[in-house]
Image (cartoon, rainbow, N blue to C red; front, side, top):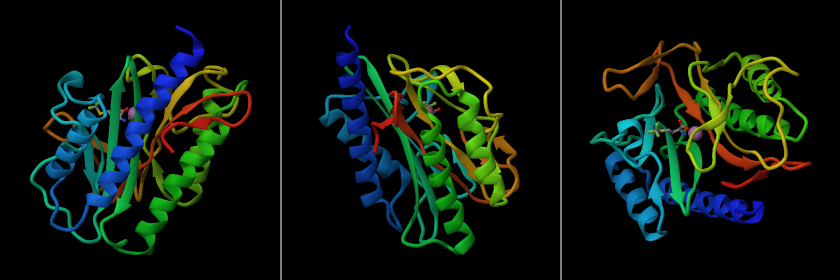
Length: 245
Ligand code: MF3
Ligand code: CO
């Protein structure tokens, strides 16, 4: 397979991921359940001739992750009704023609519950942007983590260490692992053509997280809010191409 065909397929899977995320953002409202969002995603991915990457992945039971408030990631969609002021993180993966795309958005239902929550969201997206800025040929994975960690901690928030970003392509999770903390100049070298899923998870309080008994849902140890933003990008000799923008 040529590099051009691989890129085209990553672009296509990522385009569908973006379409689904935009649709979910439009549908998420007070009274809507996260199961309803999962159903919307499943149908849209099917219509696009893709397959939900997460469904059945290590036994994961749904097409999307929907993590509310103190849920960090991997919230399983269910009968919970969204309410005004909730912080929802939705994570979507799409597999099509042999390649995956993976991205997540976080947003408030109707409005932020307060300025600190809004700052948490803004810092999460800016942390992702700073990481992507470091995703260039010749840099190292530690450069991304250091950029995220410094920025997040400067705002007094906690960056989750128990979960990481990842390479992506024919498999949802490929090397290298991409921690959202670390030291500049350390870790694997980044090279042109690498496909990376960059995904900082930022907690309002402690960085510590707990796994719920369902075996999936990761929540903050202190019960405070958490936000997550993810993009699939391709490394070039200059700025990375953000495929899920
Ligand atoms: N974006 C997340 C990740 O890369 C979503 C995985 S959910 C799972 O880990 F169900 F597939 F595990
Ligand atoms: Co991911």
